[in-house]
Length: 494
Image 1 (cartoon, rainbow, N blue to C red):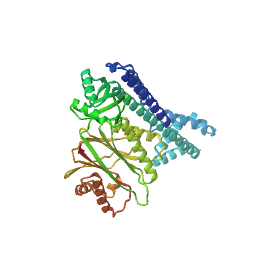
Image 2 (image 1 turned 60 degrees about the vertical axis):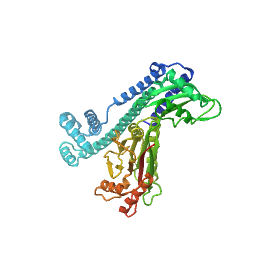
Image 3 (image 1 turned 135 degrees about the horizontal axis):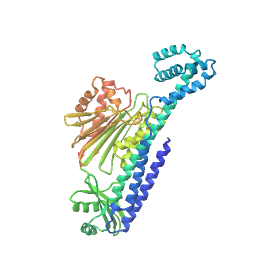
Image 4 (image 1 turned 135 degrees about the vertical axis):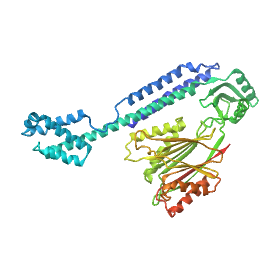
């Protein structure tokens, strides 16, 4: 199963979504009447596409799962192969396979199973038993060993193919869910009521802004978004002017969407407005490269998403140097793009893990540490795959968020550990790679790390991270035996 299959599927979905978006927004521009989006034909069409992708995924899930042992029929076929090959050329063939066929079959079958188990003690016993009934015991054992090794390799490859099918199934299933989500966002919009639209137009007219259409989108989290088709009477006006008018009408602070236009000009254009978040995150990172290396294998990213989530990701590539850097950088970039596209952190990590299992990576893997902070509520969701402990600092108190899961790329069904914690203004998140904790004495390094965090006085994230790393280095005589990264972020009210 090749990687280009997933690439083609992703491209197909993007083309479908592009066509759907073009259709709906072209109709939004043409019609000033309320559209019945629940029964919109394009919404139904997109949902049918989503159902088709899900059905494909289910068909892949329905395929046989991996096998760890040869089946009875496969062992029978091997017995027949050796009987028709090596044994037929022996002058005692008729004695073994006609006069004593049952005993010969049981001896060969048992030896194959022993070779499969790779049990040396049982293998010696099986060979000794075979000497009593076979004059070509040496040649027979060699032939069976060759056949078992061949079947073992076939089993490995078949299992890899089955795992790749599961990976493709996961990709298809996640794309189906994304299409359903996008169909709701695109088509569950309704035009704002006439009274609201007229009042909005009246207030904007005073600021020399004209309105043609206004739509309202109620989101699953209870937040409201507005989309308006605006232009100026002349010149350019900041979109913040329209957001201020909308804020006065809605009773909550509205801001223009960050990914949209920032200026309103003489041409009608659709602009989006969303509720302002309550918090902001200020972050900083401090890194030290392993001794005798010039490039760190650790990579990170921090970004505020359009849905009001602050995304932090820290990845530690296997080993150090350029290869480890490329590995972790690729994972961080892909995760960030998927989250920006609308996938949840866990879904994005699952998709990355399935792609890593499709690739021939020579046993390389990377840890993934994700923190997603809801800037409306302050709730932080943690997702870890083989990552080191994360710490939360609040005044004179520190909490540790630990994990025992495996890194991405090691197993097909990634074992993610997730949890959620409420953060308050002034709290700090401290994410570290394992090189930081490994530099501390092996006896309870997490408890010692808590003490270090408490003793480090700083009001800014960058200063806190630098102070922590400097104190950690004192325990390793200022030598870095591995790449070390401290990523810190503080929560503050806007």
